[in-house]
Image 1 (tube, rainbow, N blue to C red):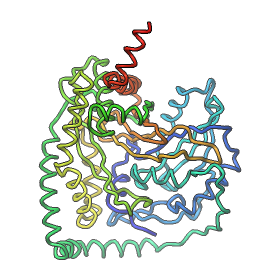
Image 2: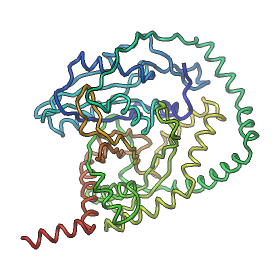
Image 3: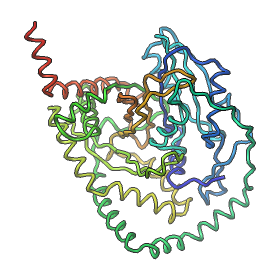
Image 4: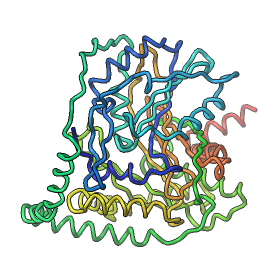
Length: 467
């Protein structure tokens, strides 16, 4: 039995009837889908590597302590591993609708917080795997690590037969309650020990946190936009595609990083979306950008180690190269602003120095108050660089899913896999029926940047001369 950290627990606290805090991925695989027994054998062989998949959450009485993970004494794989099929003609549109419908359903809090859907009927001799897992288990990087555990780098790989599994019986509610109360009494001691144990490092963190909080303070100015609004319980989902090679081609000519190019393309997509809605683009679109705080040795841990910074997507700039240059300059400034360090320090403080009940109440209140200071979320997660396989079938594409909350009606997740970069776009069903405009705008923005590189200009001129 293991207690959640403050950040893991926060994703349970902010969840409500319309904001469901699960993340996900959609993999497209070659070949016929595995049969029921073959798929079950594959997943059962992986479960020893992912103990959390057979654990459920236990809340403490009166909320005096953070929830704990405990073995599910009634674990049933059939509940989590599900099968379905797309209606004819079984194309991408049908898959997008299915993903939106599956992701609109809240995970059952009384069972382990994950589902896998094997989807048949996708055409072209392919099938899909929709994975859905609560954010309390993983952040984006941990989710990517988990994907590498569940899938295989070798098509011939065979998992050994899983050993017999028996759930462990944890302590009763009274014992958990006593441990939580004792932990709350230790809060002042923990804070004092941290300050006395490394005073110079503590002062450095205080300075960085202060600098970062000053940057945060300039972020939260209202910026009215149709991108904010009261969420409903249903979701739409779509995607865009790009090649990492072509993104790097843009980067090599115009400077910046791969992430800068990606954000510039997203800015172009939002510009197209707002213009299509008849809305002005004089103000930038403010986005929350999650930043991993996971050290190298912490890869493989199933938990959340993430902080955030806030960036302005320059939708007011029409020229794609100037838009990329604005993103590049801003991201360089943000990296020196200590915003991620401030966020990390606040999370660490909540973990050791804030009573869980007060923290839970504060988080619920903060996420339910209407806001327009932040307009969207854009999360970028690097994925595996090599092809992965399930039951010997190659995953040819992978797309991400990001949840919505805090009056954000659209969110964008970016995922790289085996030379490709994909964008998963989540929208509120009622307030964001036009997210395909955003997806098309992202792809068009990359093409516009490519058209401004020497290689592409030369190719275009050669075509015109031959014509």
